[in-house]
Amino acid sequence: MKACKSGKVQHVELLLYYGSDPNKQNCSGNTPLHICAINNQVYILICMFLFVCLFVCLYVCFKVCMRV
Image: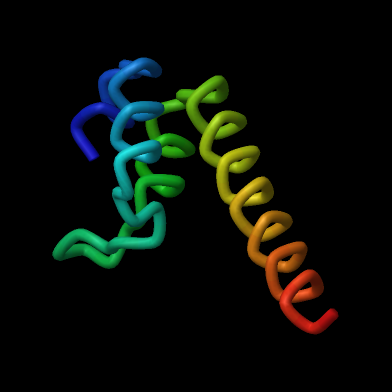
């Protein structure tokens, strides 16, 4: 969450790459996406959104491939 708040894009990318949960909530119930939006970190928001979309696409493709 600190990387999102401070705008450290490379740190966020590494955390996501190594398995950090982008839906993890802090004690206030905010996710990293909330923290980015609150602190106007648009580039990190885009990176996180694209990462989640890519993850979902890969998951769906894997599920379809396993049915065949």
